[in-house]
Length: 521
Length: 115
Image 1 (cartoon, chains in turn orange, blue):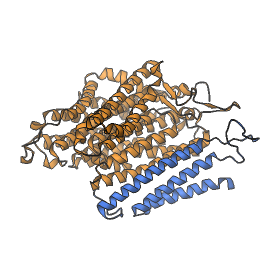
Image 2 (cartoon, chains in turn yellow, cyan; image 1 turned 30 degrees about the vertical axis):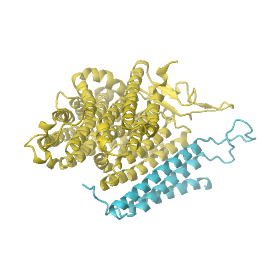
Image 3 (cartoon, one colour; image 1 turned 180 degrees about the vertical axis):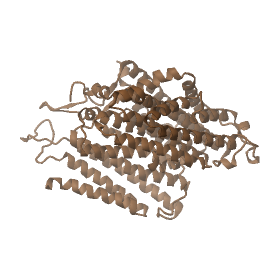
Image 4 (cartoon, chains in turn red, green; image 1 turned 90 degrees about the vertical axis):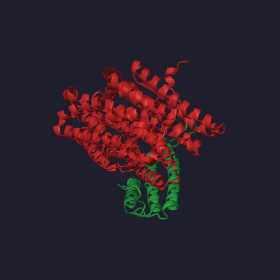
């Protein structure tokens, strides 16, 4: 039996099985439950890694649930592409790898972090369910199942954001997210329905092979782009994001960062693989670029004035998502233009894809250090902290690495991806690069502020008894630090092995379609 | 013309839901508006799958008809209804907790997280 072909299904089954095993495991005590949480997320990471290696070696892999062929063939000879299908190309595998690293780090961190609270069996279930939803969004090859997985991850995250239900602010944040995201997912379902009504297919590859622009397709595109941009926290629809990130337990915030990347993945899959060159006009690419610029600038300018540490980082997430939208939007702009693509378009996509990896790693790490500060001091307000570098040396060290990476200081990986985005967006219009550079400067300014107030300066009397956080929390942070340092020390290896195949797979629409419907519908 | 009537109803219901999400101040009314949007989407899916005079798509004893109804939209609708049930329940329980913490359901007064 060849296990390799079952990896896409295993990637979903392991966390899903873990989620429903959690209440039973909890009967065996705290230890059994914690082992389940860490083991399930570690196994997911291993499967994601093997899947990624497999896809790089053998090309696009697809898995049909409950059947051999993606078509349903009737005795009359009629065949329809209606089966449930998972399709993994290098871009999906790359996203799944990023997502499962963040999920593993968050799980390790939560073992100690959630130790003081009750209701942990529910926490474990919802955490693994959220991971399932996220990974499902990344590897599904079917528009309706994309909707299902987005709903699985949404429902799990509503529960997790409101996990501390005795806190009014947590309930408020969760309610806000629920309202916004329900409207968004209904729009996705309408879009899926309109495309189904026109083409009798929900399979993304089958849709991509037949799509031609008309009123229905434009309507579906607007609904999909609008709601997915909302789900990944682009500017005008970002108001739920800082609240949700600030109020969720920290291990969950680490995973929510990866979940927002799954929505970004969906946006890119729709734009590049379903619509692709058929999109025709430059309206949507420009919309994505403008979303990106607005999120970058307004996100960071809101972040500079915050003094709640996790809210500050939440606003930075809005601004970092802007970089990816800018990079991928520039790539989308020149999708049909071979010369522009070779000149700067592909660089922009590489920058955007690399930034997805970097952002997931350093943002998750920053949230974990913020959680560690909260765990050790019990405070979230920056003005009440000070001099913690002496008490928490390891946390400080990892915070400095993450802050340097997010601000794009030279040797770090954030610098590489930002440089790729600057130089390619400059070729479209210099003002795009100016906004991106300005954002980077403001990011640095606000992280210098955090570092200075929380870690340096005189020790506060109220913080004299603070100790370094327990080892499992440190281990969770070390996983992410190792990923950042790896990408920093071996930038050319990372670019050519991790980023470039993913970027090439994203651009290669005919490859994505051909792998499934190569022999025609 | 009459064949397009379901889609017209879908549009009206959807707009009604969307408008009342933005205009209502009461959280329960907003939850109802979200359910209305959900119903509009479900009607949309069901009416997409309707074929006049269509038969059930079974292998055996399907009858004489040549038109068959593909069951995918019905399956999608059932799934969407189940999901809508879960989210509505969750939404209402969150609203219940909001009432317990804030003592009001007016969205203008629930503003601890602005700025």
